[in-house]
Image 1: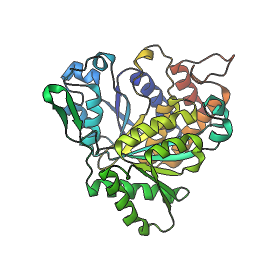
Image 2: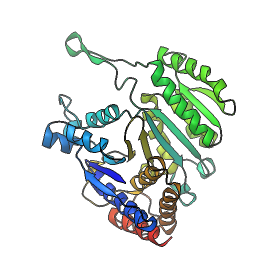
Image 3: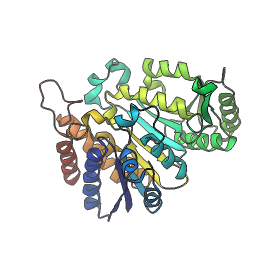
Length: 354
């Protein structure tokens, strides 16, 4: 297995290191060989190359079977609205150049952590759904600029039929593998791009007669996700809506530090936590590595088709949580919090002994 490590910025290097421990433990247990390559992306790449996603990093990704990615972002750029190159441009460039048009974010709860959610336990206990976000189109990639001497700004939300068809095809496929229910989220009462999404989804419905399809405006979806998260099975939506909804969904589990993701498409898939670079915690060994470790589980499943290996990682994460062997964001009252590296070591130990 050839895996490109792109730790990125902030807590990225710390959490990716823990995921590597889990990968190595799984490979040792199942007899797999793994080769790692290292590359820079984000602010650290700007510092060295003047480019957030340099050609050398792109080649490392293309030459690998999977990319294990941390996060990008740095306050130096956040606080400088005039910066011409930004760390986030590296993430967008990586998605675009690798053709990663589908972002998969599973939302599932751990029974021992339902009290960590801001929602009532009876609402979140048993919640289990998959968000499928279109990743390379829409407003983030449309034409943008300033007019009137900089006093007027615009961002163009544009979608082509082929972009909508391929992400819907993926979402229907995942619904078929799960509970056969698909929620298409749009704003078709206002946006022309959303009307195209809804039209194409309705055209594709007859191809999947076993799948129950519902259509929901994004504002309603945002409300229902909190009001009744167990209602959903597979949610599919466009780029901007998906970005917002999946971050909202993170509160269901009780911590953004538990949410993994996979970005897949035309070339090498990227597996990453959704929590960002969290610069305030960088270098303090306090960040929750479980989302990155769970992203490694998705890597085994989606990149290599090794479902048992992925399941072993998930069981180890669940066992660590059950033990209360967790970082400060999840530690029960009266229980000492463990460091990032300690949690990584513990998960690897459990994997080796399961």
